[in-house]
Image (cartoon, rainbow, N blue to C red; front, side):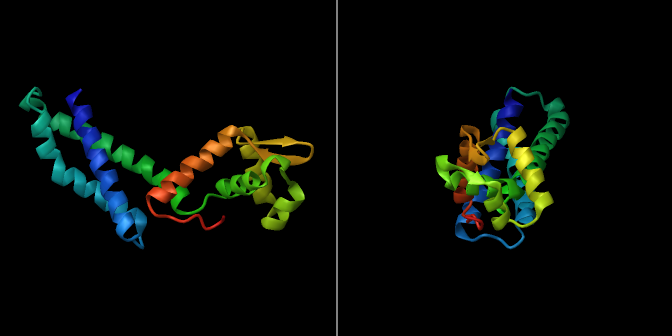
Length: 170
């Protein structure tokens, strides 16, 4: 249990550090900066935090727990990096959902979507994915946003605001 607390504190330090840096200035190579922040926070803070919460933990288990914390931290990092790219660069699905959302209850016709984005295969695959995932609905030859889609947009918008990113497609 203490190892989970230590790992969670390390993740919190990494995320707060990233948000702070992004508030001051958005780096040019964001993925590399995130990798650096996570690596440095682990290297700098693991031992002090481990010592703080490690009084109960046997010292003989230090290496095993170090490896577990390392794997937990860096598995989270790589999952976070994959998700971050959808926030950093506008996801095509998010772009479509925002356009459909802005049309409100009246919806958006497929022909208007093709005027916005001209690649048919791209649009058709994205629309099908959004329908299957229940982010949008198709009624009366128009697409409209679902509550699930609205919530997804709010979450992405919140994180974009948090890390000082602007949605380039809206």
